[in-house]
Length: 130
Picture 1 (tube, rainbow, N blue to C red):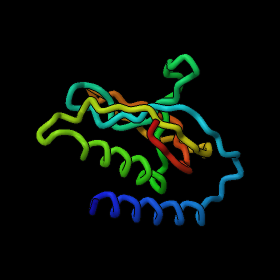
Picture 2: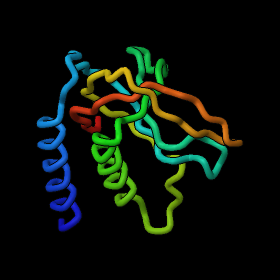
Picture 3: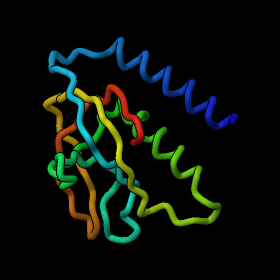
Picture 4: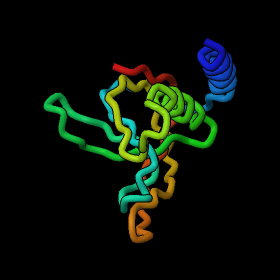
């Protein structure tokens, strides 16, 4: 219960800061997405967001801006906390409903064998687990 309250307080604090700092004139977009935990240990990619189409196919990889990364991190940490103790969480992924704004910024996504790609960064408005 204590972790849930801390998560809730941090999320509300970040949400207030994001709302106050939003300078983007882009519309809010709502999309189905998958959140991926850091999977570099098994030659996957660092944590990221993948948009999915209506069929469930992944269509675009995104990263949150630094200012909105706590939305991603807090939800991921909450899901990791639900796993049995000593359970490997590197393959963790789950479906979410994502509300975001485009930013025209790029961020570096690191994948196995030190492969680096520049991908679009988004301003997360909200994330809710499906």
